[in-house]
Length: 187
Image (tube, rainbow, N blue to C red; front, side, top):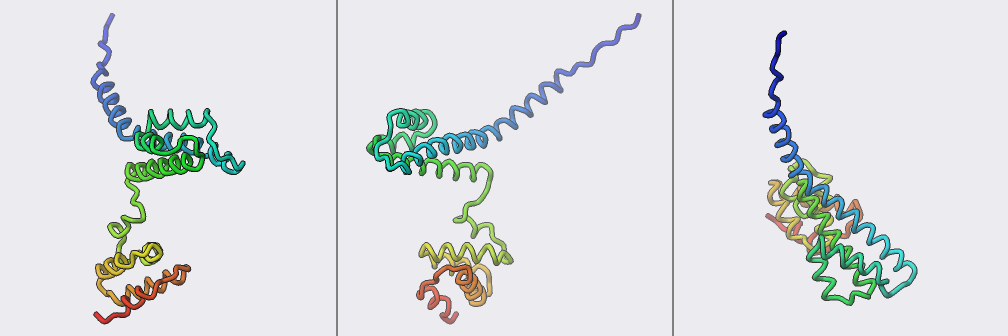
C-alpha cells in the first residue's frame, strides 16, 4: 500500500487571502462611498417629498434618521446640523444635499476621476470640444483669467482663444465683453 502525501496548499491559501485583503482595502472605501450616496439619496427623497407637500417643519422621525446618519458617518454634517435649526426642513435638506456633494467628490477622488476644475491638468492640446465646454463653464463663472492662462499654455494663443470663445458662444454661453477685449489684445 502506497501513501502519497497531500500537497501543502497553505502558502497558496495565505497568498490568496493576502491578495483578497489587499483588494478589499482598495475597494471598501469606494463601496462605502456608494453606500453613503445611496443612504443620502434616501434621506433626500424623503425630505423632497415633504418639501413638495409644502411642509416647513421636519418630522421627528426623519430628523432622527438624519442626525443618526450624521453622527455615525459624517462629522461635517453633524456639525452643520448643530449650527442650524434642526426643525427647519429647508435648512436640513440643504445640509444633507451638501453632504451628498462631498461624498460624490470623495468618490471621484477615490476612483481617480477628475472634476471639471481639474481639467486643465488633464486636457491635451487636441481636446477642443471638451476644452470649449470647460472654458464656457469658466467664463460663465466669471473665471476668464483661467481661460486665458490655459490658452497661453497651448502655444498659438490668439487662434486658440478665438476658437474656444467661438465654441463657447456656439453652445450658448454668453461671453462677457471684457473676455472678448482681452482675447483680441495684441500679443
